[in-house]
Amino acid sequence: MSFIPLRLFSQEKSQSIRAQFPILEQSVNNEPLIYFDNAATSQTPHSVVEALADYYHHDNANIHRGVHTLAEQATRAYEGSRQYIADFIGAKDPSEVIFTSGTTDGINFLARGLVEDQLETDDIILTTPLEHHSNLVPWQELCQRKGAKLEYMPLNEDFQVNLSMLKKRNTENIRAIVIQHVSNVLGVEQPIQALSEWARDHDILLIVDGAQAIPHQAINVNDLGVDAYCFSGHKAYGPTGIGVCYLNERHHQQARPVQYGGEMIHFVGDYESNYKDSPWKFEAGTPPIAQAIALQTALEYINQTGVEAIAQHEAALTQQLYQGLQKIDGIELYQSPAIIARNPHGIISFNFTTIHPHDAASAYDMEGIAVRAGHHCAQVLMRKLDVAATLRASVGMYNTAAEVEQFLLVTKKIKEFFDYVSI
Image: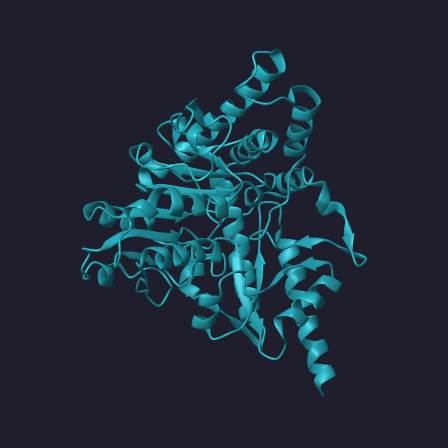
């Protein structure tokens, strides 16, 4: 399998990027930190931390409700972030951007606020066995409440939806497709645009978990043709506690709030109330104002660095990592070479054949390397892979080829140590 030539950042640019992430300067267990757990949470640059501090130093007030200067400043910054994010993801209007606490919150809102009222007994929701629990359990619960069915779409050998097989099935009772854009375990990208074309032809909702896609590639929700698209700030170099749910404007009237309280209200009568237009009717209470503002700063940083350049750099690191692990005896890799060659997304899942992944992760940590071990909130996929858990190394824009080489050296060292102990 030949790999597509990709371009790493220059040494000068890489050093400049790393200088913006002070957490990377520390040592762990007397070794320089190598942070390869970006699929769980990315690190945060100076500018984002400064945006959080600046809000609390200068603009801290509740938004929308006040006419005093601080309230107006905070409101402008908050709504300015909404506009920037709408432009960043290619939404037609900022009203399509709903602030949430994260991807999980957004998906739960869509299950209760958009899909539930449209779902009837024996209706079908389609998904895949690759889904993160956040994009699976809410739909399981919804189907149980409504007497509907959750079904898994057919996959090809590369774990992508098999569109030719999907198109042969009866679509009469299918109400929604819920799917990751990029797998948090395998880094597999699903054919979202092709799925959306098929879904539109059959009046099927398409709801996408974009948590692993937003930090690594350009996203245009309008071009993709999705009905809804959710992501989290903390996986895109932003703060925790903030996320975005894109909801196409054609669903704004039909979708209902799932939380009620201040700010989303238009008029409150003695016994019933009505609500503002989107997005405000979906944002009850005081939102995470500082985090929303700082999320704009994080996305600005991605834009300044260059979305395509980031994608190229991370893909090159992924291929380097995959090829290096392929050469080590006793390593089992779970992605196909074809996926890594065509469209790598910074995630490698693997296991030592003779070492439990949690033991291996602890050994990596002793060498200063942060990797993830476990089922990665994807137990259905783990069963399909016939494993209880895997190791996962995931890279970000600030990682380097030298770090990958060190990771591979440590991998050999861990294998040799456990081989020796087992003698």
